[in-house]
Length: 226
Length: 226
Image (cartoon, rainbow over all chains, first blue to last red; front, top):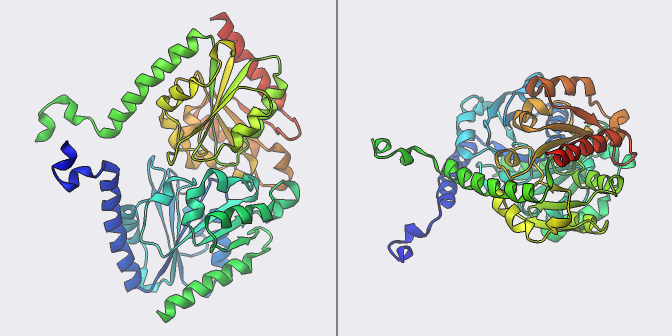
């Protein structure tokens, strides 16, 4: 069998690609650590409120030096919104790819003032599947689910809930109008990932936002002590 | 250069895969045509209301013989909901893939009573990117966008809006609580796809649902005349 010729012949092509990505992700991680920057990868569906949460976060943590990498298939509408806050931002357009990858981040970093930053948010391409498989060199993974998406999403997309360090339920101001059961959602998340905190918030009304910024500040504190 | 050795060596692997998919999609299309079945591929973000719309559609078109193919990364929660209506349904779990493909559909068809069906809805895996690239053998593509996702989605995911025969805005009952501008959304869609109708509806309240069922009935009528 050809599989016996060498160990490398057993490696499927997708694994080879992922390995190449892992190498660049490791390089990115060294760059971030060298600059003392904490990097948070935000993953969510389209329209879950990633950019709106980032805008509220930049405002709430105005004393922190925050940069943003925006990932989208096309356009720079999100990056324009971030830029209006004064925060350094770079837009990555993937063309058609459903996720960012480590080489894209490496390119994007050249456009950010790394020496002046404490934290970088990476807003990944909007979906719950592909971004989970590609390490970018980040420190933390955060998954957002908006109330209108429904509390059943952990059944359908278990991978993202297993992968994240924190789950944020966004658009809590819509809870009165929808059937999202927060307790059921928490149970489903903790069935997949017992240690992941679940924060419920509305970037629109500000409800729960301090839970999120407190969690972020704790991550930055750990970074400063390291 | 190795590229000169043969014409086939110029073909990237992804194109080879897509060509294989196209061949099976053509076979599927022949099967559908042979049974006089109209197949509608539904594409949308997670939680956009695909299953809820299908449930309302099966109820509204109770005199039509409708089957459903449910696509999800994991679970069969959507298929269970459809099965409770009595409609024939098959669940396809992609494992990790972010879209259905033609061979998956070919397998799924074996579980459906094709001779007794007029229409099959395929609920594709929830995201706005990957499903667009894989022909399944369907007659029609429908893209759903829910009001909470925001009217800016055509900027970020142009591919799906270019590919569809119809755009449905779901969850119109939430318009009073959100900033979704219907006219702006229509303009953005028609900038990408001038001929695609845009229907605004709520499967919850029934508002606009007859626009959708009328469109579907017209497609079935065309099929019967062919």
